[in-house]
Length: 362
Image (cartoon, rainbow, N blue to C red; front, side, top):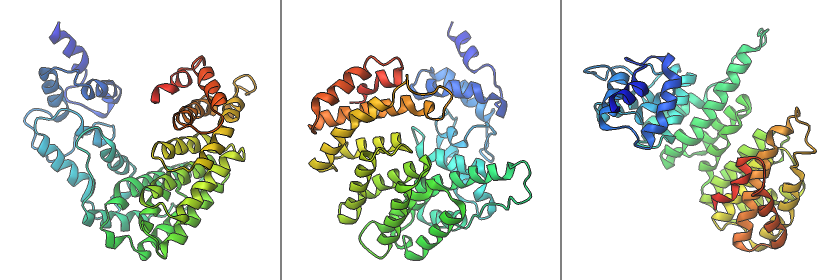
C-alpha cells in the first residue's frame, strides 16, 4: 500500500524536468502539510536532485526555483547555499531575467527557509534593477515585446518592494537612491514598486513630500492596479509612521471609499480591514466606513451585473471584502451596527463560498 502510494505520487518524475510542473504543484501542499513519509521525502529529494548530487547547478524544475527551499533535499545547507548564489550573486544584466525575478520574489515568501539578500547584495541589485528600462516597442507589430516589458516591469517592482529595498542598509535609503527609484517608476510604469518608496521616508525628512505625492497620485488614479498598489504602500508606510503626513493619506483613503469610487475598491477595503485590525483608524473614520460598507456590499449585486462585463469578475471579490470589513467594524463597534450585522447575515447565505465563508477570517 505505502510503496504503491508513493509510486503514484512521486513515480512520474525521475529525474525531474520542467515538464513535471503540474505534478510538482500537486505535491507542494503535501510537502507543506508534512503528509509525505520520510521514505517518500527521500524519494522526492532523489527525483529533484538526482543520486549523489554535487550542488553545482540548480535543477531545472520549471517552477520558481524558490520552491527548492520547500521541497525535500538530501542536504538542506548545500541547497540554500547554492540557491543564494543563484539568486543574489549576479553582477550582470541577467539580474533582470524574468525567471530569476520570480525566483527572488518566491524566496521571500516561501513557507520555510525564506531567503533575502545581504545589504551589500541588495545595493548591487537595487542599482541594476532601478536602471532597467522597457525595450523599444515601436517596431513591435504583434505587441509581444510590450507584453514582456509589462511582465518584467511588474516583477522588478515586486522584487524591489519585497526583497531588495527593505534589505538595504539605512544609509542607502538616501535621496539619491530615491531619485533612481522615481526615474524607474516614471519610465517603467511599474505600479508594484510603490511600496519600495516608503522605506526612503521612514521618518519626517525631505523625501516625505515625494513619497506622499506618489501615493496620493496612485490613490486618485483611474486604474485598479495603481489604486491597489498605492493603498498597499500606504499600509506599509503607516507601519513606520503615525504622524500627520501619513494620517492625511489615511483620511483621504476613507474619503475615496465613501465617495463611491469603484476602481480598485476590493483592495481599498482589504487595506482598511488591515488598518482596523492594527488599531490605526480613529472613531470618526470607523463611523464613516460603518455607514458606507453596507451600501458597497448591496451595490455588488449579482442580479444587476452583466455576466460578460469586466465588473462581473470582481463582484464576488467586492462582496467578500465588504463582508470581511463589516465583520471588523462590528468587532470594534463603529456606528451603523444593525446594518453591518445584516451584511454579515446576508453574506453567510451567499451562493459563492468566498463570500459565504468570509466571516471565518475573524
